[in-house]
Image (cartoon, rainbow, N blue to C red; front, top):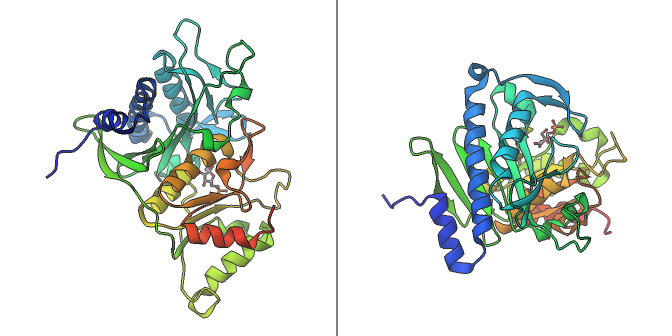
Length: 337
Ligand code: P6P
């Protein structure tokens, strides 16, 4: 069997090959991977570790926090504060940005994360995951420390993005802008080992992912697209479709990276003032870059997600991502901007 390459060796060789992973970024990615290993161990303990259930608190999204949401957030903060690679962090679980304390050196990067996506699945033992996005700290010219406005960069400005899925395997999926690679945690060695690279999403699919219980709230283009899928062979698509909905974006996106498909969380009439349910900065942007790097597409129904200029740290967005031809079809059903 070919020698397995560790995450560290992969990052070193990628830097040597095309210079996309400067030293501080390599350190950042290795620290995030180590933090994900710790989160994986906490998740795997489950009831034995007393980490299930609610933390009896709410996050900035107004959602009840699970104990593991808070644990994962703390693990990522503590792991990334002291290394000198980061200037600040932002998390779904924190109202405002977290500056690296003055007692540590400041780095050139900003790290954003959803520490544990899919929390509603924690207590029922369904795959969940950590999503992360890396931006450069801008030369903000205001001469002060990092401010929230420094994080408000379009997804096209990311320098690294990835997720770690805590499922039957613990798997880290990563891009730095030259394709998508996957690393599986070897628990005996305690290392992430390269198990797939240059991951590609098929342009066509027969599988869609959406929460069908929201059908009556959707806009006409989404209803049209789903109705056509449900009409199957006898309908305008001329083929039958399958449906999946894990209610854990990391798990649904991972399936799409592995075998194709289209994932939708569209705008709906329940809270019309919100652009969508999912968060742009630390859910949609990293997942959209991964999908595009794997040959797929990602829009909000009308616009490429990575082109959206953010106005708020926790802003939400509608998401359609996955197999390119399906994303383009559904986007084409919407009125142009
Ligand atoms: P619903 C998890 O809470 C999440 O943010 C995504 O991971 C997931 O795709 C979506 O929400 C599930 O939402 O409304 O189906 O529970």
